[in-house]
Amino acid sequence: MLDETDLALVDALQLNPRASWSSLADALELAPITLARRWQRLVDDGTAWVTVALSDRQMRGAVLELSCRPGTARAVALELAELPHVSTVGVTTGRFQVFALVLAPSLAAIADVLVRSLPVPADVTTLHSHLYSGLFGGVVWRLGVINRVRTEQVREPAGPPPERIRPFGEGDRRLFLALGHDGRRSYHDLAAELGVSPQAVRRRLDRLHRHGDITFRCDVARPLTGWGTMAFLWLSVPDGDLPVVGRALGAMPETRHCSGVPGPANLALVVSLHSLEHLDELLARIVRDHPTAAVIDRRVVLQQVKVHGRIVDELGRSVRVVPVDPWAAVDPISQ
View 1 (spheres, helix red, strand yellow):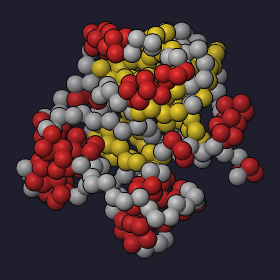
View 2 (spheres, helix red, strand yellow):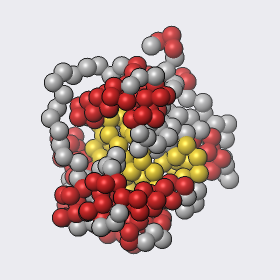
View 3 (cartoon, rainbow, N blue to C red):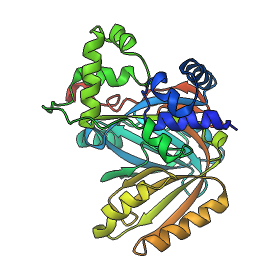
C-alpha cells in the first residue's frame, strides 16, 4: 500500500496533472525536490503515471463484450490490449469474459473498426459491440485524500476560453501522441520531438486544454490505494432520464467509465471498489438515488489488463505502455 504522502501526491496530480513541483510544495508541505524524487520513484515502479485523453467531441468509442473459449480470456484480453485504439481491457465474470473500450476519431471510423477492421482474436466465440451515445464520466477521477483547503491550493485555475476555435489538426494529433508515454513531458522535450519551439508547444497545448479538446489524467495502481476490486455494470434508464442519471453516476467517486449506448441496457458503468461488500452498498445507493434506473447486469472484474494505454500487472502497476491512438485503425485512403 502507498503511504499517506504518496497518496496525497497522486491526489494532487489528479487535480492538476502538469503542476510544477514548486506550485505543489506549500499545499503538500514538502520541498519541490522531495516531491520530484517521490514522483519519479512512483513512475519508475509503475505505481503512478500521467497521460493524456481526448474529449468526447474529438473521438467516438464503443464498449466491446467478448465471450471466449474456456481458459483463453486472459490471452484474448492481452491480444486486444496491444491495439493502440483499444484503450482499456479487463477480464470479468459472467457470460462475456472480456470487456474492452475502443476509440476512433469519427463515427465513420468507429463503424469501420466494428464492422471490418478490428482484428478479433481466434479464441473469441461471441462479440457484442455498443456504440457510445455519450460519455458521462470516469476519464478523470480522484483518490480524494487531500482536504478542501489543499484541494483549492492545488486545483488548476480555469483560464479563459480560446479566442478562436480551430479544428483538431495533424499538429494537434502529433502532440497528443507525443504525450502518450508521459503526460508530464516538458515543453522542451516535446519541442525537440516535434521539431517546433517550446513556446509553440506551450501555446498549442494551452489552447487544446482550454478548449477542452484534451484533458490530462493521473492514474495509479488502484489495488495499492485501497481500491482493490472492480465491477462492470449495465443499467437501463428511461431515455428522458439518461443525461441526468448518467452525469450523476459519472460523478461518483467510484466511477472509472460511464457511457450511454443505444439499446435496452443503455448505460455502461465501470467502478472501482474497496471490496465486494462495497458493490452491494453502491447498488443500493444507485437504486435509492435513481429509482427509474434498473441494474440489468453486474460482473466482477477479475483482472484489469490495460488501463488507458498502460498494460498493468495483477497489482495494477504499469509494466508497459501502448499509447492510446484513436487514429490507429483509420484506413489512410479514407482520411
